[in-house]
Image 1 (cartoon, rainbow, N blue to C red):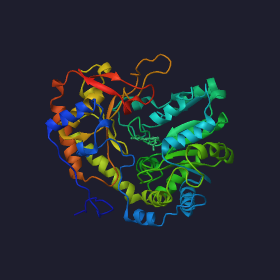
Image 2: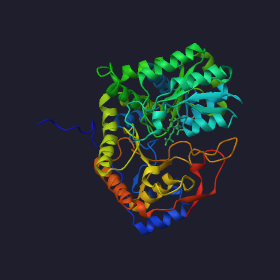
Image 3: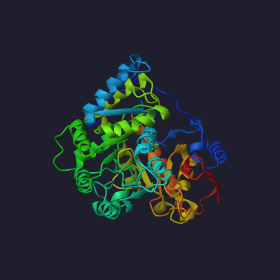
Image 4: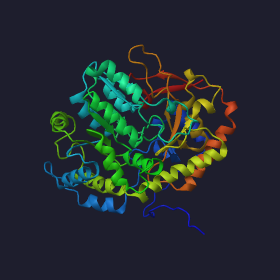
Length: 457
Ligand code: F0G
């Protein structure tokens, strides 16, 4: 008999979970103004809000923390991190930052000015926020296939070369760089193929532009290239990463995802001029160049985390768990962005709660229902997160309205996946009784989903 696949690690430390009652959860979510970000963590049973900074570190990472060098300048941990990043990405210049959005802030302070146009594939909300807050424009050039959640194509995160070329043909002088998010979080954790990265590079070269990868989940992307793209099945994850980054000029990184740490980020680039430009903003915003908002011990743990996660068995364990949950949803007939991506399941709320109009935010409604059902906390990646159009101030209903269920790295077991799936099935079975959604009673101009206050209709 063939042995089944199992995790490439065993558990050394555990953390108790609190199970609540439905009545408690109904009260808590009301008190939280129906915004799941306002819940306290002990009001949550299984937390699928995000895979960002929620993972479990390995014994080797914890050991590395004890060796962290907390020197203000010239920390040995910085040089350990720098060596690791350069070895994995090929980029020589490194600026640590306290998280991914800080890397965006530092780099974009140097590169993005009012009126600029930054094309890419579904900019993440902080990326979009850092562009739009500078009175510049984020133009989404994702392939149209990403909009059809039921379509099974291997690389739904791709940039549409035609759309990208059009932006450049019309406005090349306004484009400071192209940004490619690997994997494409907003489109459902969907990967970008090596072929597509090559095409983006060719278009960028044609117009003399540089390319940035938003690399939060670059290892997941490499895994999908290995398993889905011809010619990569025998390559190591590290080899694939190296090739991916050979098509970019630099990267912003949220280390809280594929760096396997709870906090951290960085900028890495091949270009001295970008490094020199970004440096000027690192010091006032983040800190001196050899710590950039991170503890020495956190840089040490990140160096180990990056090395660990770029090994096949670690990333495979992670993706297989997400695929396990997806298989359960298939069994129950619940529609989600297909094929399942790397870090999360994105349930197609428009299809599940099809009686709720867009104006009443179906995905947010589904997130609330799932929380009340079982204490499972997901996150709306939909019309609330999309913010309003900066010019017309209208809600942006053009994209997808998804309930994202993120899987933290090395935290939950497949029994927890069974609970999530069963809870979702229970909500799905009574979907026809859910006919009204929510309305916004208070919101901010940018990134409103974090703090929005809602009322149930
Ligand atoms: N880019 C992508 C693709 C992201 O998913 C995130 C964060 C960031 C940049 C910003 O990084 O949080 O370290 O400042 N995504 C988290 C999420 C918050 O839940 O998907 P950060």
